[in-house]
Length: 154
Image 1 (cartoon, helix red, strand yellow):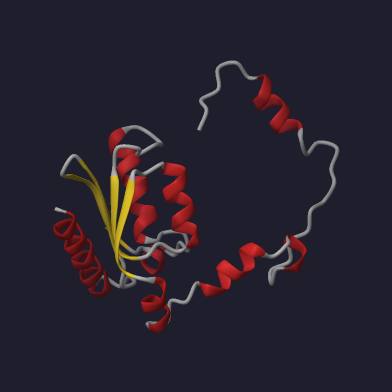
Image 2 (cartoon, one colour):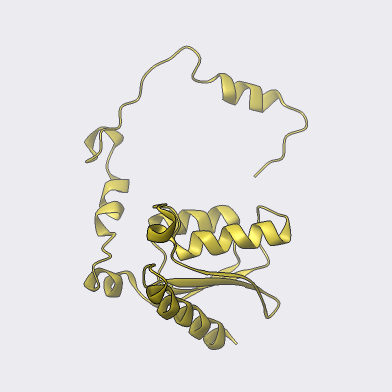
């Protein structure tokens, strides 16, 4: 079953190239049923966050009416990038199966290695300027969240 779903994710990647997207495909399955599937939508949607994994997770959450996918599995044509990895953990997927790895992606021109390096650096040393500003109001949203009695934890 895992190989079948992974082959479908790869087929999505093939098809996505013809539709103007990148060579990536992903699907979310639960109990042997595909809940959502997508190719990479970065260029067609002009959205740098529209990776196949992110789009499939968004669609699955909408279909299931939940922001957690703890009983679902993600199948993707390539090892998830750092952004997608974060989304996978936030969605609490139970497992991820992938075909190609990050080094295969780098050979094809999709090298996220610099992001892994940037994550390890202190904010002040990253390539993109990241400067924390001290504001009196900065912690107010967190304070309000902590005292809210009807919050939905995630």
